[in-house]
Length: 132
Image 1: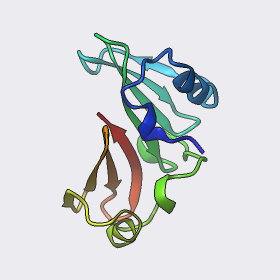
Image 2 (image 1 turned 90 degrees about the vertical axis):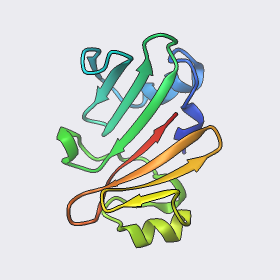
Image 3 (image 1 turned 180 degrees about the vertical axis):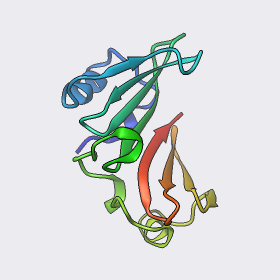
């Protein structure tokens, strides 16, 4: 299992990042949506990778549930036994009390990165995002 949080802050060409991206297949590259980052959209793998333009460092990895923003579902393991479609209560059981909780997300700070679980309007997890 990949420790997605451990990839945050590593260079895009780092061997660990390259090994992870190698599992994801084809990516659409979008460098116009954000002046500071280039996004690699692995729609079929359910993964979005954000890379800082100035440094080449990975600043975010987002894992998607099927159908979220046009992504297929990420097939790998989510951290701490999380599951897509879990609610805030199940996220709290897995990860503890969040630093920030709203109906749309729960945010946790972990060492050198943060983790956000994003919820749909029904309160079910639709994505997990690791970011700097």
